[in-house]
Amino acid sequence: MASNAKIIGDLIAADSSVAIPGDGVILASDLADGSVTTAKLADANVTIGKIATTVPLGTKNIIINGDMRIDQRNAGASVTATTGNEYSIDRFQTVSSVSSKYTIQQSTTSPDDFVNSVVVTSSSAYSVGASEQFLLRQFVEGLNSAHLLWGTANAKTVTLSFWTRSSLTGTFGGAVFNSGGTRSYPFTYTISSADTWEQKTITIPGDTSGTWLTTNGVGLTISFGLGAGSTLSGTAGSWAGAYYGTATGATSVVGTSGATWYVTGVQLEVGDTATPFEHRPYDMELARCQRYYEQNYGTNNYEVKIQGATSGLTNSSFRVSKRANATTTVYSSVTQVAGTVNNGNGNVQTAISSVISGKESFWVVMSGTSSQIYTYYFKSSAEL
Image 1 (tube, rainbow, N blue to C red):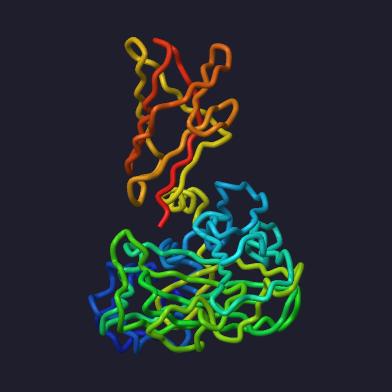
Image 2 (cartoon, rainbow, N blue to C red):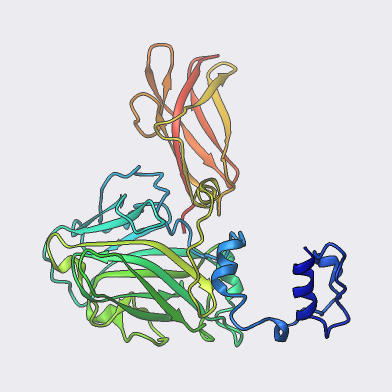
C-alpha cells in the first residue's frame, strides 16, 4: 500500500484539498467538494465504454425488447404479416399495405453477446406501389421519450444502433417520426456482406419543431423499412415536415422472393455516441413488455366461482400496471374458445357475459351454476 500511496501522492501533491490516509486508500469522504476536476483526469482515462460496461444504468435504452428475447404471443412461431399490423415479438409491430408478402419470426440466429433476433422472410417478389409500405416498427410511449425535449429549442440528439444481416446487400432504410405523421427523419444504412452480422449506428439530431407527445400516447416511432413506395419515402439525413416511413432508394426486402433480413440489439439513447447494448435482466424486460401486453394463455389458468344463485363476478389482477385501460379476452382453459370458460365438473364450456378491464385488473362477468368454479386463460392488451 505504501508504494500506491506514494504514486497517488505524487499525482496530486500540488492539491492540498486531498489528504492521503495512512493505508493509501482514498475514499469519497476524503475528497473535498470540487477537488476532482475534468482537468485533473488524464486524457482517455474515463471512457464511455468503461462507464457503459461497469455501471448498471438500466434505463439508457429507450427501446423495449431490443434484443428480441420476449415473445409472449407467439413463443417463436412464424407470423404472416397482414394489413392488420400484427405484433410479432413484444413491442415490435409489422406494417403491411398488402397481406402475406412476408413472414416474421423470433430467431436464434444472432451475433455475439445476443441469444435472439427477429427475422423477416419475403414470401414473393412483390413490386411495391407508390403509396404502399412494409415496415417493422416500435412505438415509444411519450412518458419514456419526454426527456428528449423534442419539439423545443432544447431538443436532444439521440443515437440509434443495432445489429443486422440480410441475404441482400446494398442501402437499406428506416425512419423516426412523430405520432401525427407531420415530422420524420429518414435514415439509411449499408449492408456490405450478405448473411453477415454488421452493427449500424445512426445519429439523429433532436427535432426542435413539431408536436411530440409526452403523455402515455405515442411519443415517437422507430421504423425499419422492408419496402416502400416513393410517396412514403423521403430524403435521408434531415428532418421533414411530412410522414416518411423509410428513406428514398432503400432496398426492398419484399421485392426478392425468399430474401431474409434480421435485426437485434436495437438501442436508442441520448447523445451522439453509440454505447454497448444495455442487457437488462429478463424479469425487468418482461415487466416492461407487460405494461403493454400480458397473457397467461396456455400456462396457469385463472378461476371464477359462481356466487349466490347463478351470477358470477371475479376480479383478477395484472402482474404489471397497464399503460391504459386494457382490452381483455378470456378463453376456455380446455377448448381455448374466446368468450367462454370451462366448467371443471365435466369440461362443459360456458359463455361469459362480458369482461370489464382496467389498468390494474379485470373482471369476468357471467352466469352459471351456483358454487361452481370455472377456469380460463386471458390475453390483455394496452398497446399504443
